[in-house]
Length: 475
Image (cartoon, rainbow, N blue to C red; front, side, top):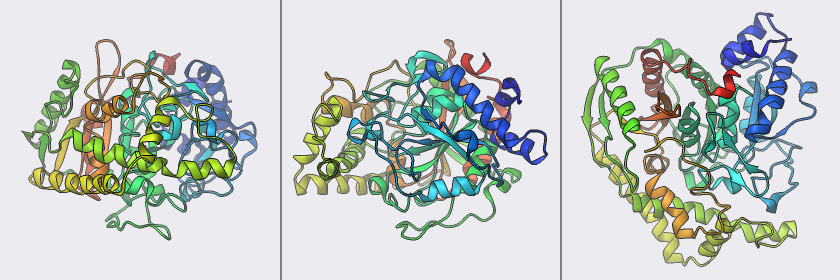
């Protein structure tokens, strides 16, 4: 059987290569993932279900052949499997069809072995629910793994799987990537289909992709999951060549706008700023021009637009509850979700139009204020992973307004680019004195994933992170 240290030392691309060469059997990867899950998941609560029949599932032969993979418990559906979206309202709910994302995952050879934890309806940057409990960070169990893809991030960082399904409507790939020391790309709007059910998820704010540990896994995953499907509402230029081939191309000389100031109410932690400056110095040494920029957007507009769109996403809950024959009260919804639902149901047509007008204005302001730059460089978060509960929907004492402060303080570098549709990636480029990961975000032009891949490759080589692993991943 495959040795655990060997399993942990490879990324998804490397594990698939071992299978293709015949050096390990596909079933060994599944067994290694199960053994790793059994060893660390009780301390993390990252995986809410490891499939009992995982070892009997067929092994694929694509570019990720037989690599264990987790499905985030919201978004992409998997026929016959539970999808509870972190909510007691959907306890026991099973999907009756595969989403396009799942079909592509299987075609690439990924073996879906379970589902990862999410906050209720993926609303929070903190993965903790009344249904499944708190998901913990393998770097420090008293700190959040982030959200809403917190279960995926915790599992990948701890080595249960090398790559996992994730999605991002206001930072939900990049927040956990920063908290857990991973590579987290939010692709351009339209790059990855959300169909057949969620082609326009959150009115175009949300996109599906993966969390992983290496740039080459990110590139190969883009090749696997990119491409239009029937009914997709957004058109995007196709890549000039396979994304994996971009890693052999040099990066052009770029003009980079760097955000060294806070874009919201929380000041930049000095260690985060130091990592940002070190990244800028590295890019400057590689020949790029660096220029400091002010925030291109009012954080209150992000709260109005992004939180408003999230609120509108709750408008379907009354019909869903009737279909399920369940109430909408504190027996099915968490305290903050209930307050947000009340806020949603009280919205007037004018309130709703204000949400979309704000989103329009944000797109225009960011486009005009950053037009002189090829890419932007920002912190992913202004601080390292906070303690649990700060903006969790489980808190009975947190008002809807208090909850919304997350978008105007902690997540202000992220939501703007969900609105614009631009691709952005969080890279684990630093570590605090206390040992916590520090993520730095690079934002590219629309449809500019190829450019981000080249920059990310250069930074991975110049500021390598592979040797930095959480204590649980080396135990």
